Amino acid sequence: MSQERVEVIVVGAGPAGVATALTLARAGVEVIVLERGAYPGAKNVMGGILYRQPTEELVPEFWRVAPLERAIIEQRYLLLTGEDAIGLSYRTPTFGQPPYNAFSVLRAEWDRWFAEQAEAAGALIATGVTVEDLLWEDGRIVGVRAGEQGELYANVVVLAEGANALLVQKAGLARDWQPDEQALVAKELLRLPVQEIERRFNVSAGEGVAIEAFGASTGGLLGYGFIYTNRETLSIGTGALLSDLIAHEVNVSDLLERFKRHPAIAPLLEGAELVEYSAHLIPEGGWRAMPALFADGVLVVGDAAGFVNPLSREGSNFAMISGKLAAETILEARAAGDYSVHALSRYWEKLEESFIHPDLEAIRNVTPFVHARPYLLRDYPQALARAFRQYLTVDGTPKAIKYRRIGWKLFADLDPMRLLRDVVCAAWHVLR
Ligand code: FAD
Image 1 (cartoon, helix red, strand yellow):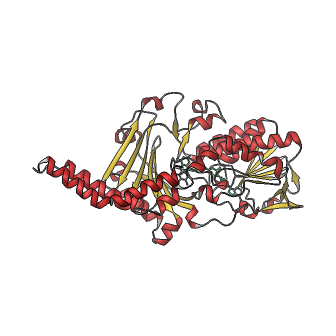
Image 2 (tube, protein in one colour):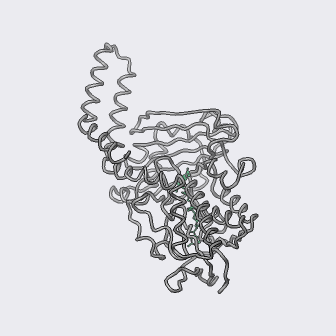
Image 3 (cartoon, protein in one colour):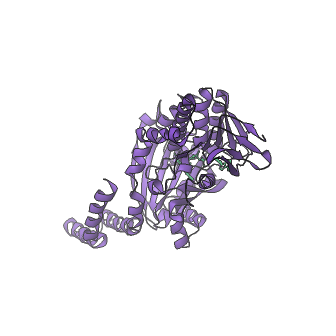
């Protein structure tokens, strides 16, 4: 591809890059996606839950034909201590019927299929190509350099390279990311017979469960463990902020092993066979760590832009919708024949009009708030588990005495003044 030219180059064939290319190709734009993996999805890691509504903005009724694992009909939240588990769950058959709400997917299969939709629309997807650098002319980005494959020029380069975002830094749009701005997650894919999965998780064929576990699942660090049911595998993982893993000298693989051995988790995994292990970063710096999202000749989408909502486990939808909005920005710029920073700044307005900007702004203080209060995921689960155990233990103690004891113990454990301060602080910083 030495010294060739296309209208738009997209770096990365994850959900963000492919959504950009799909939208552009449908509008007749000459677009190429450069992907370092052997195929789209080869390098990608996700739990992963894919959301129906945002995906349908790209491919209506994709659920009729796409490679999906199970429709998620139940969400369970667990608060774990060393041995105990407190749970809350929501289940509805509605989520198991068209048009559905969310699906478990395997990224290697989903990304490949999604990329095929972009190819069918006219996008070119070049795999095994690692973009090493950006090309500049008069202070604007005009293309990319990809080692032996040479140089490629374009009107716009879209950076959809995921969490590491090395090219975003090279473009001068971001500083180096800090360890407290990325979570490191270890994930395994475990094989179990289909009937075993359906029996253990109490679901019928095609239905699935998503579990998120806080507290001991991360050794009390800020983060969570997860289990998602696939057709004949389970996705299980856990992780925490990189800075905390370093500070506490915790290895994320050890954390995952401990999570798998927890008495509330181990029976779900018994006899499962390891198919795949991976570890990956999730950008969790949010609003504060967001890079500049556009400059002359360049736009940033998906994880590379830090578009993740760790509170609600959303990333793939931010990636796809930001890709779509970036493509729509490019179409406007193309119509005006102007790819300057001024023209591409429309991207920001589109983000503001979508859920992306409001959602990221709304949660901007949550991570710092919880991070500054390590007792929330360490001491509180223990206090609550103790209270539940006492409440449920039938030991001949008159109930009035028992409830008073539980109340006083909780009062002492939770430190009401601190709790009150936290509630006020949460209302002030987090919710405003
Ligand atoms: P990616 O999917 O990371 O894709 C980037 C692509 O760019 C990759 O294919 C990579 O190979 C390629 N690339 C990188 N650098 C170069 C280069 N220099 N040259 C060429 N190609 C390059 N989100 C959800 O919505 N639901 C979930 O349940 C969920 N679970 C998750 C669990 C884990 C363990 C992790 C790590 C993430 C999870 N996420 C989840 C987040 C979600 O995976 C991401 O938000 C989403 O994949 C971001 O898409 P993207 O296209 O921006 O980046």
